[in-house]
Amino acid sequence: MANGGLVGKFNPTVAGPGTVPEKITTVNASGSFVAGTHTNQADILLIAGGAAVRGGPGGTGGGGAGGMVQRPAASITGGTTYPITIGAGGQRNNPSPNVPTPAVGGDTTGFGLTAKG
Image (cartoon, rainbow, N blue to C red; front, side, top):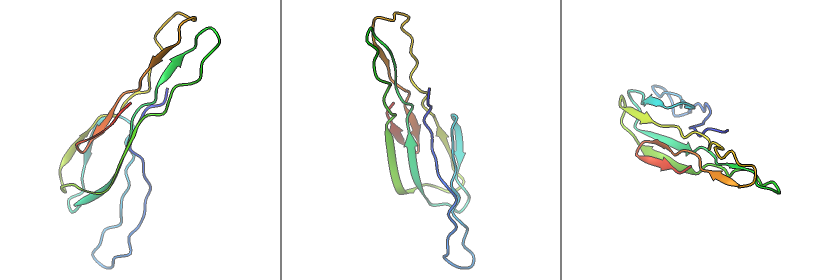
């Protein structure tokens, strides 16, 4: 099972004195993200949970990847708490070994955006 999430890295800025270096945050469990006080935009990447498949008589391929939404330079409000929901990977739940059963992953949501599982 592979869960979705938000991923990033640290990239310092070179804008001069009084600026704050960029901060990249990874969220891999549902909760909240609090924007920094002076933050007014963010590069957002949401990834949904991937699918799972229970094999049939001849075996089947694996599940698919979760959907992705990317919004560079999205407007956000400093000091605001944004709820984040991370989509779980799909669960194989059919006990029959002879019937291939797909199970979609869960949606990842945040900042008014949704990546479909």
